[in-house]
Image 1: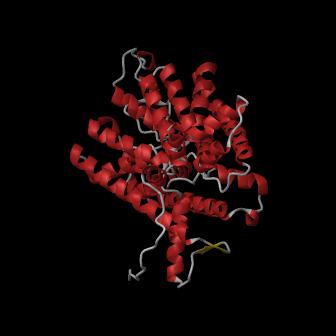
Image 2 (image 1 turned 90 degrees about the vertical axis):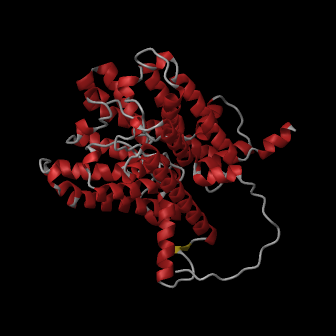
Image 3 (image 1 turned 60 degrees about the horizontal axis):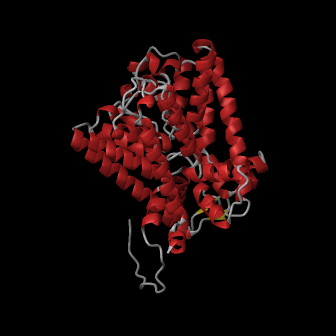
Length: 447
């Protein structure tokens, strides 16, 4: 019976159960009196919300991180961020490798599914490169941030702030420790600082392009033609999604009278940063409540797209968007197949992309409408929060702390779905046994 149970534990089920176990463990630890500055028990729902947000690298919070949580609580949050960013399975395999245990075929298969690798072969070497790359990038980010934080806060606290923000940025988590200057202030105190802005932007983008993209770029260096098709789509789409919204924010949003006192350099930095942060980063350097509805809608759409497969970012992924757009282009041009960079995409890739897109859109809209009705808040604001949750972004218009318990449960569910992945949840729950016979085919006219 036990062997049958093990056979039924598919990689999808291992992933969702692993994340669930880490979240519950983190919630229990954060509810302890030692986790709060006041030395009091934290309500379990609030601890669960924070643990889910950290493990799912989202950044939505009900309490300001530095004002409410003690050093112990902050450390728990940081550990959850690191585990959630790298992936529960990746961390488990890394621990097994360091302890000298043999990694079996089943574990390699699960690892392949966890980081969306194309094949099982070489998965351990890739894991080793991911670990070394993560340590080096987060370490370099911390050293650069320490140039600003150490002189301002002193050596111990400055180093802690540097490490915390570096890991949070690389994992696209959006948690910050800047609340001493004002609750939920994020990085608004560093709007004109190019060092902090550019380091955070670099960490978020590197973490968000995905481990497979790293591996490909590392192997082929600057030879773009040698990259895999997925890497080409990720890099091209990511560049466009950074540049075009930044141009929109600079030309429209930051030219509005409400920002007239902002110098040109700050406008450039703020435009680029806000374009980047919507890709599931969760930091902000300006007050988002001052944004126009047009800009907020652009940010919601960018949040839903998110980062890349097998990365620390959420969303329905840039490759999904690329496949949908390329498919539409192929229809416009009356091509028989979806093509990109001299390659033809398989039909099942388009089916998966459509499924993921519809699933995310349905959860995003239905949850936003529910929260708007339950808490009587504007629909656009509610959609901003639900988009931020399901895409594991963490940006907020300030609604989350004041929402009802039911709305918090909805956001918890969205953050969890957004991190483990919509298809992963479906594959884990639905019986995937294929029917041997196929139904008759009939043509349907669309458009």
